[in-house]
Structure formats: structure tokens, C-alpha cells
Length: 227
Ligand SMILES: Nc1ncnc2c1ncn2[C@@H]1O[C@H](COP(=O)(O)OP(=O)(O)O)[C@@H](O)[C@H]1O
Ligand SMILES: [Mg+2]
Image (cartoon, rainbow, N blue to C red):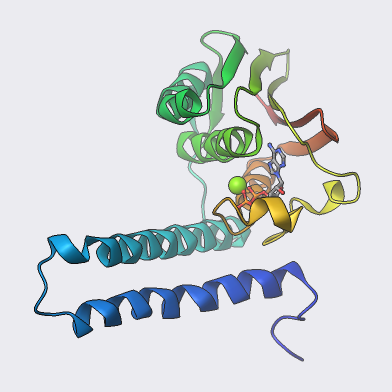
């Protein structure tokens, strides 16, 4: 049995990973061939190496996150924390990216909602969904974010305007390495791991996550967690 079938998204992901190493090595070889040159004149190749190694580091961290969440012997530490503040922290970290794309953000976050969960993992999920919303919305697009609390649950949702997700892709976007619309995703970096990590975390924390979309209008992601 082959490790990956060439028709699956896993093969696509494996292919990308395989390509990263020769890419970094090729840039390194250029530097070695020009060892008499100044660092300044070779900065382009150094920057390519930095981009390649940053991507490798992110990929390795993503794969570790996924493996940890799927390892039932890995213990999750749940502590009470203010999730409203955690969301505001993530928004702050995304401000520069939103300004760059002239994105209009609308928030409706119930203040001081307390949950008992894993604060770092929850922030990771919010960041994954927020980064996608910014990445896949158009210039001057809109993002709506909300947090609501009911008696037993919290409901987080994030919606972005733009191309959305085609009906046939919707059931697959939480699969690891799956990226819809290759013509568009090739322009943006990533390996199709974000949503599979978000799903693994939310389910491991006892919640549920779902996506909905109307093509050429919006994509929306909602997760719920027990209080
Ligand atoms: N907010 C969104 N709007 C439109 N498409 C999205 C959105 N979020 C995710 N997608 C689609 O789902 C795919 C998987 O997302 P993800 O797992 O985060 O991987 P990546 O962002 O690295 O491609 C994306 O490639 C994209 O096709
Ligand atoms: Mg992503």
C-alpha cells in the first residue's frame, strides 16, 4: 500500500513538503557559489531561505498540533479564562493584515464571557479562522465576528465576504491538506492544514465546528463549546 494515493489531498501536501527542501537548498547553493560577494548583494537569496525555513517551521508546528490533538493520551489542561478578552487579543494581532487589505471588521462580542477550556488552543482556533477570513476575502472585503453565550454553550462565528466555498468543496475543507480552488490557493501560502487543526482542537475540547457558504457571497465558520 502506498503511503499516499496520488489522487488524494495528502499527496498534494506531501508533494509541497517534498518541494520545500530542494527550494531552500537551491538558494543556499547560490550563496555558496558566490562566497566572495557581500551579504548585502546576496540578500535576495537569504530572504528566500528565510521564507522557506519559516514555512518549514510552521508546517512542522502544524503537524505536531494535529498529532497532539489526535493523541488521546495527550492531556489537555482546562482552566477558566475570559474568552471575550482572548478574542480581542487575536483581533489586535490581525489588525495590520486587515489594514493592508482595507478590510472592514464588525464585531459583536459579548463581554467577559468565562469558559473552562484550553486558552492557548482556543486562541489557535480563532487565529486559524481569522487568518483564513483575511486571506480569502477580497480587498475591501468584510469580516463579521461574533461571540454569544447561552445557558449552556458559547457560540463563536466568523463570516467573510468574497468568493466563498463551492458546494462540492464544503464537505472536504476540514480534511487535512485539502485546499479548494487550486487557481486561487496557489497565490496564497498554506498547506490546507489549518481547518483540520481547528476541527481536531474543537472536537477534542468537546465542541462542534461547521462551515457554510454561498458561493461568490460569503464563507462562515461557527463553533460551539459547552460552558
Ligand atoms: N474563510 C474562507 N473563505 C473561503 N475559503 C476558505 C475559507 N477558509 C478556508 N477556505 C478554503 O478551505 C481550504 C482549507 O483551509 P485551511 O485548512 O485553513 O488551509 P489553507 O488556508 O492553508 O489553504 C482553503 O484552501 C480554502 O480553499
Ligand atoms: Mg488556512
